[in-house]
Length: 455
Image (cartoon, rainbow, N blue to C red; front, top):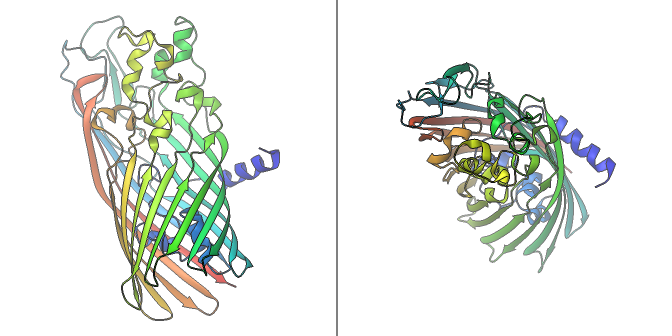
């Protein structure tokens, strides 16, 4: 990867100072204001430049334009933990009891897209956007070590969710797509391809108490404390991936689209090499989307999409917390250094792959006004057995309800959308004190506006 391309990706990330999406796991429900107005449905019904982030082939049907968008994302995240009932039953680490709401509740989300006509049957586009991320800040609370009674170390309570002070993570992802698309079969079908550059910025705080369960610490025989675990400010990584898409208008009223976005292999977060599996790797998972669009009448279009997000592509995201018990210093008889934090099998968030079902309707009221509505559902990726680490990343929302509009005027158009994700809760036992229950909850609002200059 050239130095100039690296610089472009770092600049892209710097332009997204506070993206913190957490909708379908940590993927955004939709990309683009119009797409978001149908809860992410519409990959087979291309309407805007940002379609290239969902299905590169859809770009072939977009007229030349420049789009600028801004969104305001407001997640409400909280967790609660019950009292420990250990009393000699084997509890080693109890969180609280705490009942805390995360700080940081409003995040701006800019996007930019542009489309140029290379010929009557081909388009080139560029899009800059944020597709995901996660931000939490848990201030207050306590953690108690060895709450079941005397052990190798004295019983003690320390401030913070994990006993390391205010805890949380800040993950931001920025994407830069360069897309080419071309129609064929007399304009009824299209193929598209995107080169995707990605940049990530990450920080973790308040997790230093897990130092004894890192590969660095275990490999040294317990003599060297890890330096790349917690409270090391922000670190950045870049990577390159790609996407392919196909669009086929089977009849005048029915179209199908399919797209694949590859896994993006990212550089390591060196400052957090003792936290994430594979020495600080945090790749971006692949995804597959299939969409259907039916023109139900002259003015009404019905859309449906199915998206598969392959979180199991990424060890840091999908490795279960139970892997930690294989670490030699975990006290469970394990002898595998790679099961320690930072190892290739190091404990992660334990996320499953996620299937999301999206449904939307577009109503062209007249030549100047279009209205949209949508609903999506996907089983959230966090199992009840994985709640302990997922306090840091409680991406538990499942349903999204959306509405939007477009108003045309002269050579431009305004679009807006509003999305609500109702509260969802996941409950499970604390991995290190099974007598304690932890509940993770989240609900969200997102408001988006964009303007398109049509050329």
